[in-house]
Image (cartoon, rainbow, N blue to C red; front, side, top):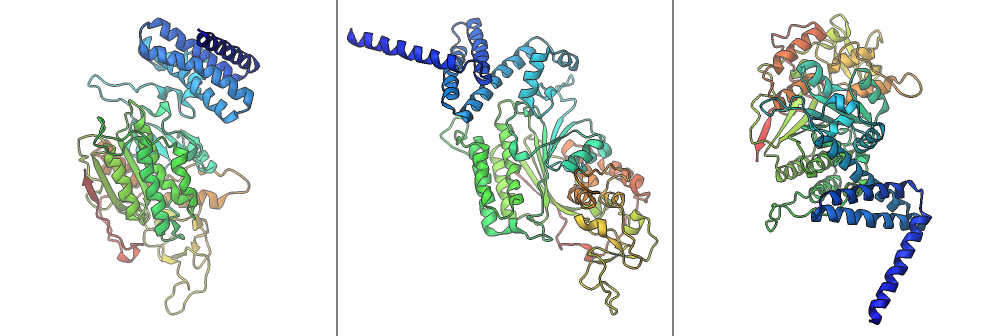
Length: 535
């Protein structure tokens, strides 16, 4: 009997202490949010008597109110923020579900959301569009009418132009990029791009549940032979490959024969914890290759994910160990077909630009559209693009003394303008006629890569930013190559015809015949033979 009284006394004392903590924290936004979520989930449990799941949600929500109060009083700000986001996320999920239960979701209904619900759902989707919280419309055969595509490391828009302007694909594209100038350029071109750090966003964001395709084009400087190549050091490769494996464990896609799902439980590591070892890399840009696996697996880990395809662009010198590690994790997670090609944009009607392209598909069907044109699409010469007469030579490393025996600038960097351009770099703003010193314009630089002459290249910051906008073009994916890759992904058998028409309009050249290319312009001496593997 004494034990019962003691227990009751302890419970009463604890209740009084909890009440005091809640009173002391009263009015704090996080506590208010926790209280709102508790009220809603308690209401839900009352609406579904006997439902153990609803009852558990309500109990946990009420307990969270007390925990939040103590965290506020004791100054645990990080935990307070976590509880706030947790509670607000549950409230947003409830609002989203109830809105869907009320009937078909349309753009008009979304537009007429009350202010409080709109603010809540915009927060839930942030930084992505609120309409992405709902599934896209389907036709009578169940096919998605407008697929959603997310492009990470979007840049000024080469990938998106291939999709939108060359293929004319009716897709909903959202890009993400950290470079303010690239974002401003893409936005001025009518593209929807979020200015943010890819590593600071959550791949499990609820607004990404209905995305069909993710494309990633991480910076290549850590791997390209023209740079220091610190991403190709053995130690760097080991660190990156380990992070790729840890991503598979964090997402819950490591095989385990004792599990009914075939996978081991999620490791419990956060995405920031998966990324943490990458801080050891001498070139931080190399570590961004881990995002190629973090994002697709993170998106797929969310129940109901519609992700079908992953597309990656990187330097043609990407270490094979990294590529193999990526494909291994994607295959384990259910991407049944994986492919890789080294492609040169000169075969698609632009300047030389060798890149490695990788794709992976979750569907059982194997892509049937060839990524290579039936014949190389003739590329214009450098002189034709920039409007020079024939017979000129241009310098890519500034003005240097000319060797009288060879007629070429000492130290290299001298090229005939009567051949297709070498790969555009950030120094292209200084490329000049070897005799007259005449330089090329940013419009010329963009056209060499495959962008329209009037593309709105934009610099953000002080000065004219000539190097900044040249760097944007140098980093971009050639739009014509993008059209070829996405032509295969989307099954567009007419992509080659569309690319030829675009090249003709861009340069005014005849794209119906093939022009032979000198072998010495193969910058890295690599085969352009596609390789594909099906898991």
